Length: 88
Image 1 (cartoon, rainbow, N blue to C red):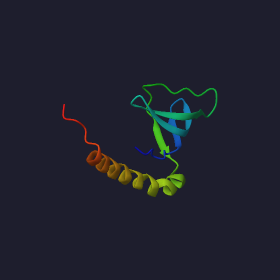
Image 2 (image 1 turned 60 degrees about the vertical axis):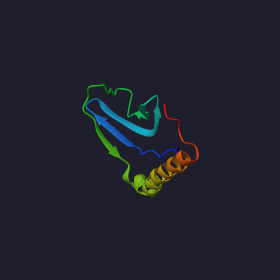
Image 3 (image 1 turned 90 degrees about the horizontal axis):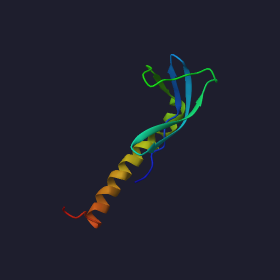
Image 4 (image 1 turned 135 degrees about the vertical axis):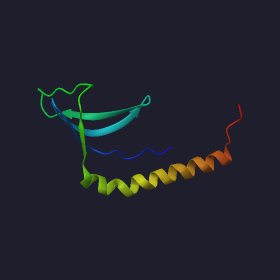
């Protein structure tokens, strides 16, 4: 499976702003990696958050992102024909 290029942006909550610099999937969870705007920021689990994507960056990676979906689909199709999973 090919990896998708992630979006970046900011998460803004009542306690401050978190700048998202990287996104990874680990153990079924989506991890947003980045930094708080300043040391007094506090974001909690129950907070309402506004997520804003860096659309200038997104417009540059969107074609790659979509093509990766298509390529992943094609690879799954081809490999399932070549290496079928056993019926259990």
